[in-house]
Length: 132
Length: 432
Image 1: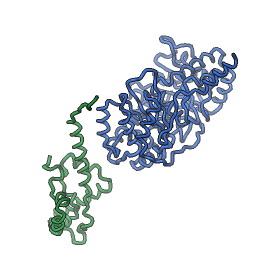
Image 2 (image 1 turned 45 degrees about the vertical axis):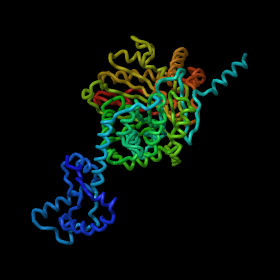
Image 3 (image 1 turned 90 degrees about the vertical axis):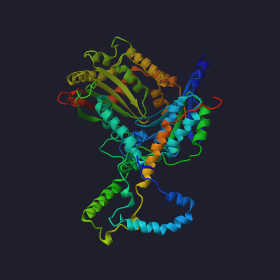
Image 4 (image 1 turned 135 degrees about the vertical axis):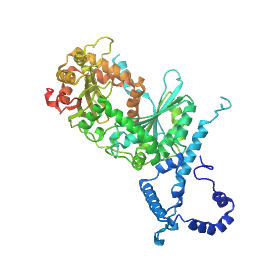
């Protein structure tokens, strides 16, 4: 299993919750990084890049709606084609920032929570209530 | 003396088997046997069986969606906690009602009622749970029903007899897909407070009412309840090919059924016992006409059963034999016996009445029959004692039986044949 679960480690939640000021300062840098990394130029969403070779992600993928699942495969095929051509899509076909939604992350988190819950129930120690 | 007898009669007519209380808008009744039993069972009776479903199969899906994740926790939590408490959770579906049952050790009613309340009020009906947990169980139940000739024939007999409403199949079918959203919409109607009642065994009505008050108190979903159309009897014929060799233990089956609208009259309750079929004594077929016919072919069985519903009933004679040829010959003889039932002798009627009384009296002693009897009665506000129908059964005479039998058999019969269709007789060949 990947370190930090299927999604890996991220400092973003800690920054957002505890150091909101720093998070706000870093936001333009993060946006710059995201567009420089180039997945949007290939027509992909960020969640298309999550490695899917794990049971949790596979299960999360099976929970996508048929439409989301189809669109994901379609984006991947376009990206593969552009990868073969060694060039990004024409600029008008780049994925708009507004459409780069985390459609899979929450599903993976739900699956991980289920796995964790099962582990907890499996290793439960039952104690007799006082007075019984 | 006459007066005292009258008083006694009126008292027994008024006496009810359990008091029905109302707690937070829900009818509640608890049955406590003589000695305190070690376990308690609580059943939520929902007036939302197959009859009321908005889409074919949605009631079956709702039944299997019980005890999945709710606002109170996941399906896993429900299952593991129930194991820790030493309880059993189950759900069952009939044509008119859906039963959610929790059986547990005495004293745990607070936990389990809360669980039942959360199932009713806050099940999430997640699409992924539907696909991953619910659908496989529905699929196997449907396949099992299709592989069992008697289950299949009875289901088809209902659909031929009543078409819609009571005729709806108890099993979801792959031909009419149901989505999680459909189930959610149906559940909101079915689980409305006016539509449910709580039945307890091994717990007093007072204690149950208190527990229901605290568990159900918060959720005040009035909602509109489901309504079905009144049932009409149609009748007809259905033939289904079945390779009986494919399923071990499956026998070709033929069902001859007669339906009537309205609640089952006492004569109708006596009629299946007059026809008989199953012996109440070991090592002998007994003396009932159907049992004597079934005795001619080893390994065959014929039984007459009355399926009573709130506004209709179906008297079904089910014939099973090792071969389709044998089913054919037995069916023709059974039809003659059914026809002759109208002209039964007085002592035969007497015997049938005694058996009908016994069947009524033991209804509350088997948990499944208990649910089927007491559950629907709970909605009407009182649960009659098991012997309350004795007086009306005693009044059944041979002439009244003849009258209601001729009335019943006048209508078009429902005939369902499952097996080798090249051999099994058609309805008009049976000799009605």
